[in-house]
Length: 104
Length: 533
Image 1: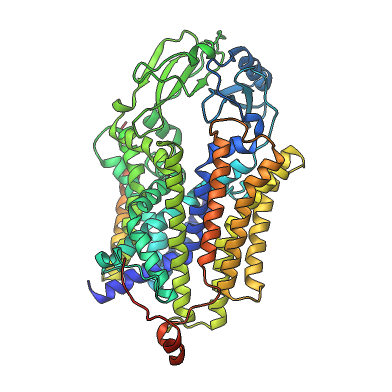
Image 2: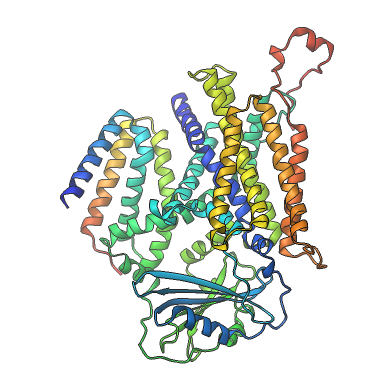
């Protein structure tokens, strides 16, 4: 458990450092993937509708969300805005995942 | 568009193409050959070649005996029977069970459709390699197994999607570029125009293949991650929520309904006979048969009907037209990606379009190098870009050489049957590596090298049907065109196309008009026009 926490902490620090040095590149390679995972999981939990159907649509949407986020990294004029957007999405998604129980 | 934004998007297009262009090339070229998996199966194993009988022999007793003998007392997870069809004119049984150590064991066997005799066992080789190398790179178990490989291939789809999107944005004169193909001009313009014209005209196909490939690839790794998050790690709960809980065995032995009776069960919806049947809880009172029927016009692979494996009573019917929209879309992904919904000629079209993606990728890479080798861009030495160019040549033109080589290996292999796949893979990589090394060390110019490798590829592919006719006499003895003959004809045509193409390739770099000596222009050369098509 401790080693997992340490590994997670080190990964976060490294991710933060790389994001500081090369924000767009780091986000396009790693940040967009993390945000996609959290956003997809959160949407799966909060969107209305039958769960099985939602899961299939989310699976179909994952590549599109991922590519859209990657594209946004290079489209936006402000690198800072992209970083904040990705962090917010991941944190918000994480909170939803942590607190919301799946409704079957 | 803002210049800064344009440059950023252009950079994204460049580096995503340069860094992962070769990988996309490998995935798309292997995908071209993976399309013909069914045809190549009968090409590689002549024991599987037979006319499809009007009334295949009953197989239930043989199949039941095989399941009992193979699984013994172990718990059978599923037993599948694929019925004879035009593409696979034989019975194909598959079985999965857990052994005493709870390890998953998978077995399969084939039987002649007319006599019911077991067909000589032949281990996977050529067709398995071609399909699985495209699907999951044959990723070794020691590095995480096939699922990791599949996810990596899926990432190629993501990269291709981002390349397409950034490519569209980066090309500001898109309408003009649709119709500009200047073959009479410099090599760089020729590549640029080919890259843009192919990229634009075939873009809908590339987008479709990228999205479906990304979905098929990354879903295997994304689903568990998302499940782990939304279901707090309880993957089984997620599976239950999406597809429903599996039927539990009752522990009471029961006589299974004959598989031959199942084969005769017509789909009331479209009149088709079953393609395959999957049995769960084999030999138990709660046994179920999941019957897969081919679809006729709909974009999808199968219609599913579930019946009791003991009484034959209908449990569930899932006609394709009554599926939910999400299920309908997801059911169309695999047929769309593999081109299985329109017969042999659709696969040929997919093959040509897939090859065009290889051309787009290769020209993109060569343009990038050309700009640095003979232009003002780049800050590395000439030698570096020359080596890079030769590496690209070796990888791109060595891959088809490696592919052709395993066709030869398949027919000339005399080793132990269990090692066939290993030797197929080893030969594939050795030949590919040899081509890369040759390209890197050969003291010949890039243009001569490309021409030479094109010729080698052409001769190898033309030689495959010739070798086949020599090794397996009578391959063309039947009057009608059979799948294995289509493989020979297709390879022959492909080889001839490469041969013709090789004739048009220059032996050396054609100097741009402005750099040529004035005298030469006056004496012989025609003025170069920059017209469009």
